Length: 403
Ligand code: ADP
Image (cartoon, rainbow, N blue to C red; front, side, top):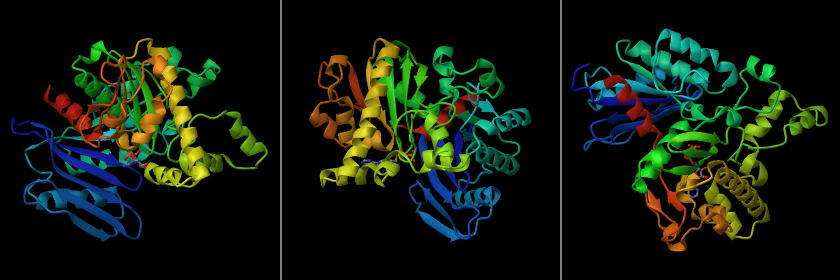
């Protein structure tokens, strides 16, 4: 690689979308960001925003039949800004891969063997890994000479001890089908736990942090001295907190009941619990802004949905205080965690005995910067720490190819 190669393209390939960012790793600056959506549908859309001085947001609509066509369109848009994928300044492409199983505990340069292993994990991540694999194959075909790096959502959680990672089910059955708790959002939990330590002026190895990643998907993690020791998502992202459209924890027997008594098929139950439950199932909305608006207007269904969401969140905060023993900070992140002051206030309300409180004025501040919202001198710092999964993927990718 030439010494001038300082750019990393980050690709997040979903089943019908590709999100991308081009970063310059000298300072982590974004050079361009964009999104291709509705791939394979009659009308697809590409929105490209160059972040160079002269650039302007551009949009294309029309059929984009597959990921190869999507990436070709992205390459054309980047080239139009002088940021083409054939540039010698491009050091690597970093791919978000959802499931890395037990094998991948760190970012990994993609080889045929690595791809085959990611493919072997499809049965435990049927919704995500196939799209991620397609993205990698497409990018490899476009620039076969360039390192492609897979950064796994599960990697940060591979440090979980067996007693946190195993379900209490028959060991042989569990092992035969690789059933265990893997956890997700790991790139975010890694980034936010480190940034929280930095905010406290400490090394990550010195602090115990509870990270609450509250987006449309939501998960909590307990991070002791920089290592994840527990997290709320499990075999799939369905376990744990109440989310936008996912139920989070329920009695597994609910699924038997839905099949035996309600006559639903496994696919219908999967759809119900992943897409029609959580906040949207409870009150018809999954956007916290809308739910808060309805709560403020006295809407009872929205109030109950909010209360259920908060109750679950509190249970996980309490549980992770117990898991960690000593907690130095609780960090809120992602769309809800970064923006919804009422959620942060309600989540720690009544937890003074655990050392947790928020200062109303600090909590009301709107900012894109990491910040403390706990009262001065509080035993446990409560913080808002914006996540940046793309920057983390780019950093991990770049450090792997420049080492
Ligand atoms: P994901 O990456 O899981 O799609 P995000 O982290 O982008 O999700 O979070 C999206 C969610 O954040 C929205 O569904 C909405 O509930 C919430 N959100 C975004 N902005 C605000 C805001 N200003 N106030 C409250 N909630 C917000």
